[in-house]
Length: 210
Image (cartoon, rainbow, N blue to C red; front, side):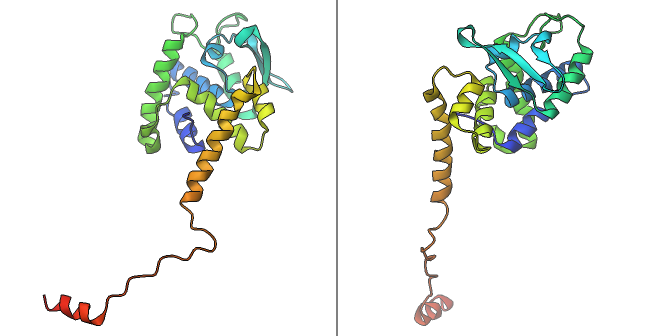
């Protein structure tokens, strides 16, 4: 399972050229994908009226099985969304992430833009070069950030729209595997470092005379 560290996620979100309309669209899509953990199908189905800005800013989406769920938005996300909505025509049913012709992005298009921006971000954050970053990576990244924040797996399952909480266990297992790998690189508390080799006087004398 591939997910991004905080530094990698920041580099990816910062990769699009925000001096262009498409760059600002892509930045919001990447940011929203990581903050909300939406599936790519849920991202591209978002409409302008899916977003509510106010005291309790949130978005509504329709996931698998036509199940609706509401996800709260963080303050920095609200700023990006508000700025983007100001650029969009006031059409409630218009796609939140349109193409240059006004139609909704496709799954393939999102996959290509994620790959493109990941390659750009890898120049700033080299660890990205060794990862296969896909739209689903954004979802995994959201789940792992929630887990590291101390959110229980039942709440993460609700956030991601998992029908079965067992599906969410993969993130717990991934986190434990990372901790195990880290632990393997740390000497045990009662483990002394190996004694430094000390050559004998005879060996030193021999080497000097060679």
